[in-house]
Length: 297
Image 1 (cartoon, rainbow, N blue to C red):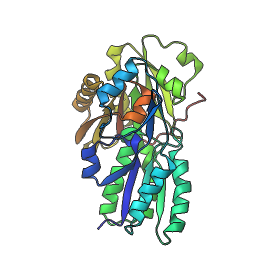
Image 2 (cartoon, rainbow, N blue to C red; image 1 turned 90 degrees about the horizontal axis):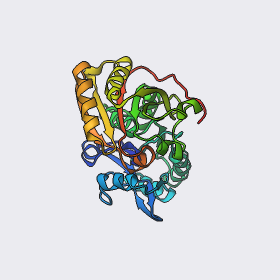
Image 3 (cartoon, rainbow, N blue to C red; image 1 turned 180 degrees about the vertical axis):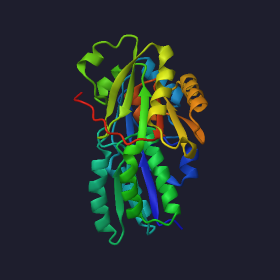
């Protein structure tokens, strides 16, 4: 029997099949559209991914929330009452207040359930970078490690999760304040695709411009090749915001040049999607430790 439960949140973008395969649960955030609030469910049971991104294409503004306190309380109590400790892998604290909130809720819940532990880990990333850490937690738990050992391990490896993303329209990230770059970068964006990493403090940072759509895939291939370590032992993760064609092209090009064990294509969920906008693709690999820190927004 598992010694602790593994939780993440809506920004992990884990599909229902992956949640089941790796015995991971999540704490839903919320999104608001036309003054109505919805839970950001990863099975897309409220709005389909196509509907969601078409709303954005039509100019509908979608706002998001962090994980609400009552959601944390309910999820934590569910597992603590079963006699389980909890490991919560959180969205980057630079992108969401959920990590900070989880620490406060965890402190109160551990008073209510003496003898139980809740470890909250700031993943310093989102989407499949965050998801990968939760999957690693599952693998380490299966080796017999306890919640403290696994949490400490995740904190020691989190900056080896490399993100390479590009968006169709940087305005979504600018509007949400979810990307750092110089004013010169933003001042010359026509016909340009940014290459965005998750930096060492967990913020999205545009490191360079890709000129022309035809150069997006080749540039991303080169970025992966420069960062990845031991690809034959890992899965290539690619997430997209209703842009399967580009995601597949990127996957095929990368797999042709880098010997990954396998690959996984998934949909960017509602929370990350509301920040990055339709057309986005994001690639995640395990590689060199991220040392770059972006400048001010």
